[in-house]
Image 1 (cartoon, rainbow, N blue to C red):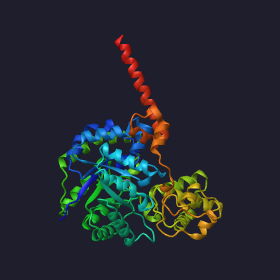
Image 2: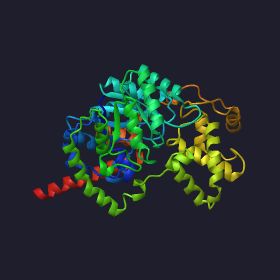
Image 3: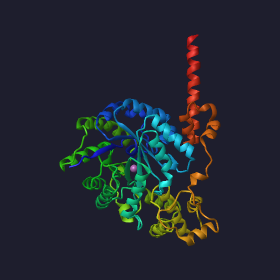
Image 4: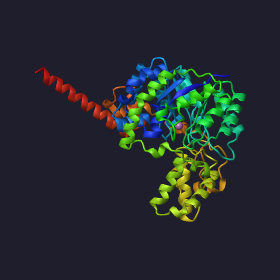
Length: 460
Ligand code: CO
């Protein structure tokens, strides 16, 4: 039987999904040599929310964190998650910024960049993919998995082929909501394996309890790499457990090259930290439980809790059923965007507004307007022309990629941040998260000045 490889997510997605990406570097520093020995295909350790969290909450330079991981893990491919033209956030950046960010990520130690776009608009990943390849790293073209009447096997196969033609090295199917069932996984992975030559990676979450079964059927269909988290940081909104999947796959005859002794050491290392964050409340046991609501409503769990929170805040929780019925109608009007951030929030807020106003699209958010203008990219399906006209009037939507309307941004940002930035990496931090980065860079400068004056005093 074939070989299945593993991407370990404990440092990024598990960390992000279970404890809001608050794991400081010093909490995992000592286990890095063991993570390096375990035999993973890759270690997902950067990008996503790690960057923002380092600057905003942990007082860490995200670039330095990456360099330190690189140094401690010389034998393992380091992987990051990148939102295509949005980099690590939700706004579109000009191409020069995207290229510089990718280039510096690779220079600082990244080997694999998993690149996605929330709408699966391949124009929004093209530049990041091109720059990744130019810098000699592995570009993983990523498809956001969603359920809708237009998201069928043909559409996914076409996306994968487009990405393969773009030159990506692997295709990743990203089921961010954990709604992909084992049957869907089997059919989809099989169809992709039959139609593209490059390796296929599957990313899912255990949220609805489907995760391990989904990965197992994907393995039977020929998947090459799966994402898992070391067991004490697995399950619930995180990934299925590394050790459990390795055990099950071997039992079924698959080849798995993981070092069980190393996995045991890694898990034993993280157990006291898990106990610590459970005790402090940073890890809420609720996120570790199985939640099947997403399966009943066909909306991701996070979106459902947002809807409930919105309605509760307005004392209108009795409207939940109406809002849940309106949600798929709004999504249809918008051409079936995948329900991932920020689209899930935008669709949810609009459905709520439509129900509460008693009139559809009477109140429309700026984000929905921008979406209809084409600023997020191309909708996967047809946008309802009547709704578009009602909201935009005679304004014609963009035909070109939104980033093509943006002026270059790196040099301008470099001037803006001035002396506070000591490197191009600092400028990129500032571009990605201006407020947080500026505060971080100021604090760093003050700390340095204090250290200098202290050492001068000592000399006296
Ligand atoms: Co994920």
